[in-house]
Length: 324
Image 1 (cartoon, rainbow, N blue to C red):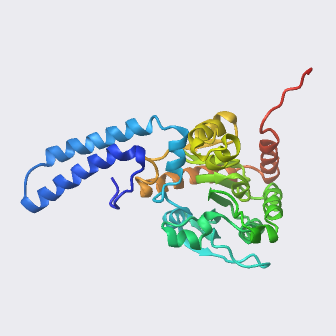
Image 2 (cartoon, rainbow, N blue to C red):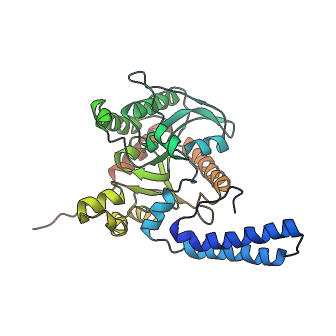
Image 3 (cartoon, rainbow, N blue to C red):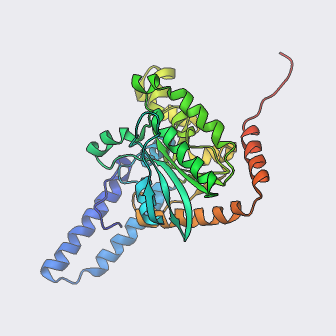
C-alpha cells in the first residue's frame, strides 16, 4: 500500500475496510507495544488477494472510474519521475499559453527528449487552473511548436495523453479549435523523429488526437480511449445519463477492446490496484517501456519510419463491399 492515504472508489470499498483494520492494528502495536504482527501480515495478504480479485474482473464503467481517479499519476508526475533537467516552454506565439498542456525538453536516461502531455489537477483548484486537462487551440499550437523544435534537433517525442476532450467553450471555437487539432494531426504524420504516444488516463476524442499521432500507440491497462465520454454517449443515444454502464460497454473504450480492434499497439500493465495505488511503481514501469520503444524506433531509418507511420493509420478499420 502507498504511504499516502488512498482514496477508494465505490467498488474498492472492501479494500478500504481491510486497510482500516490494518491501520487500527498498527496503531495498537505502536501505542501499546502489542505483538500483533501476524494479524497485520495476514490482513496485508488478504488486501493483496482481494485487490487481485477485484481488478481481474472490472467492468468497462469501473475502468472509466479508475482512469479518472484523482490520485492517478499525471504528466507532471511522470516527467518528475523519469527525467532530469526538464525545461518547460510556454506559449504558442499566436495567442498565449495553455496550462492544460505541458511541453518542453528534458533528459531521459541521459538522452534529450521532447515531452508533451495533458495535465489534469490533483484537486478542484488545480483542475480549474488546468481546465481539467482540456486544451484550447493555443495548447495544441504550443505542443506543435515544441515538436517542430524536436524535429529540427532530432530529439524523439514522448506524448502523454490524458484529457476528457478538447476545451468545448465558445472562446476555443473562436480561436479555431478544430483547425488547431487537424493541423497537429497532419503535421505529426510527417515529423521526422520517433513519436511515442501513451494514453495514461483518459483519451477523449479530438482532444486526444491533437497530440495522439505517433509510431507506437500504447495505453495503460486501465486507461480509456474513446470518441465520446460515456456520459455524453448515454445522453445522446439513451437520452439518459444514467445509462453510462451500457454506454461504456458499447463504446469499446478499454485498452483490451482497442488492442483487439487494432487501434493501439500495446497495453502497459499497471501495478496491482491500478496506477493510483502505486504511482511510483507506475512511473518506473512507464520509464522502462519508453526506454525500450526509443531503442527500437531510433534504429529505424527516417523515411521507413514515416512510411510505417502512414500505413499504421491508413490501415485502421475495415469495410465490406457487396450487393444491397
